[in-house]
Image (cartoon, rainbow, N blue to C red; front, side, top):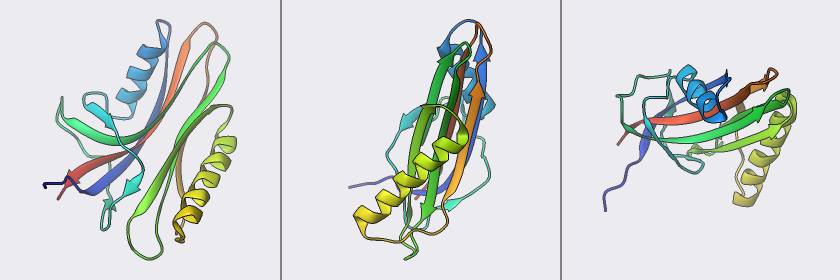
Length: 158
């Protein structure tokens, strides 16, 4: 059986507002994160053995692109945040990603993400190294829609 196993990933995020709709704010947030021209496929939260973080890479227009994606949409005066946390296992066998979103601020979301990562570690009986975060927050201006996104994007495969 042929398997797609990621060997590289990058982290990206963005936020945006739109006077038209939350979908347009989402689209612009993806554009700001440099992943708006791909066909995004949400995957769960495992970083494979040997996969390494790289700088944001260009991906061809229309490419099917696997990613862990967090998004939060809001409207007129709401405070929103979306983010991911990720860490490698201390035993060297890959790592994990947690995504989250909320009405609130980045600090509250980081707290929630840390708890999720700690629980992933606990239920697997493994220790994690340093937990990294990428969180966007936005106070949505009056009479506009807003969106925050954060993503771990798999960009090369073995």
